[in-house]
Amino acid sequence: AQSVAQPEDQVNVAEGNPLTVKCTYSVSGNPYLFWYVQYPNRGLQFLLKYITGDNLVKGSYGFEAEFNKSQTSFHLKKPSALVSDSALYFCAVRDNAYNAGNNRKLIWGLGTSLAVNP
Amino acid sequence: ETGVTQTPRHLVMGMTNKKSLKCEQHLGHNAMYWYKQSAKKPLELMFVYSLEERVENNSVPSRFSPECPNSSHLFLHLHTLQPEDSALYLCASSQDPSRGADTQYFGPGTRLTVL
Image (cartoon, rainbow over all chains, first blue to last red; front, side, top):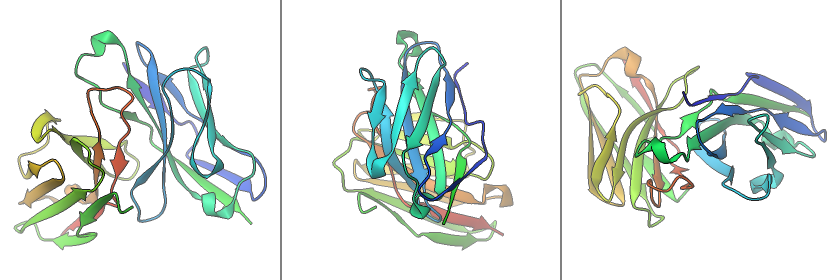
């Protein structure tokens, strides 16, 4: 079965320090992987996605994510956290397997709350 | 967030009321989606429209009725809701849902409270 796990409900980091928000996935075929961010009382904003090619994907607001096929992970990273990065982060995956048929729903993680302390 | 807009942003309704949520996308996309977001649960996909045809309906109760009059507008008609339907309702759009790499873009959501 397809699934996404974000093992940490909350991540706390000091401003200026590097941050990592973890995501692991399970799909039968090749994954398309996405990260979204949600600020309070707002909708989800697309950050970045992995389709194919270079395992390191760069996205908006200085975020990047590394696709690791052997560990089935797609962790979100930023070298230097800002207080304004405090938000809820969602990982999502879509299975690109041929036998996925028309069921190309995004499978979502539960989200990780990131708190960046000044 | 001007790409996908949603109105109203907040809605409080009684269980016997009828109301509608509206979504409009200004991105030239061909597909639109309704999601329900509840605390401590994954995003729940409710409906998908592609080129104004409903292509997915995920066992949503009939008290939720979607309408997609054209590729830019999407409505969610609500009637006789239950308190457990209180949630953030998110609209999204994308270019082509048949492509796995398709990115969905979200509106700000409507915070619905059912009394």
